[in-house]
Image (cartoon, rainbow, N blue to C red; front, top):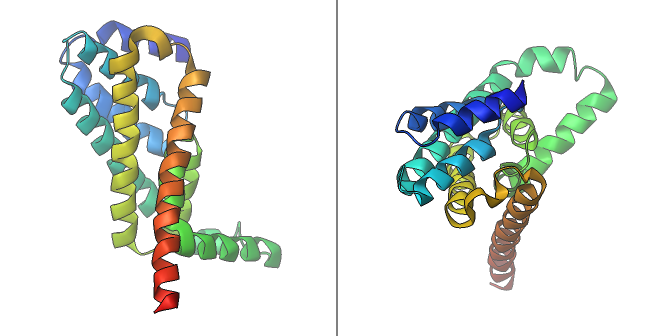
Length: 202
């Protein structure tokens, strides 16, 4: 079934009708982490490299779709927080894990959002958890927008530059994506550490 979907996506990727598909697939993948959003944006980048599509539009639609989907996942988690705390996280051990997750998201929520955006399934877990633990929505939107833009830019530019090379090589594409996520995360963590060090010295 997934192979059929990928074949269909490839068959329509050279026309302007692929633009809304990029948006929709990126949105759905944030909520249903089995939809091939990276591959879809990479295909859009490949088509842009052939002058069939415009790369800025591919990136913009991929990022916007992903951001909309992430916000849906956040609010699903936030709305379900009460029932989940009374059922899934009812035990002392489970409640402790949720408290730990809330603490980590409060300290490094932005970094986790950026890194998890490049990990299929991880992005949904982090966005839903952000909602369940009621992380500040303004901060969530800011870092999620950055994460989605970086993710869509990586996938679109990868397709544009590498052509068909990574279209079927998902392992290499994932490794490149994860490396990019770690690099961005390390940079943000360094800036955060330098800021805290400066504050301590003052």
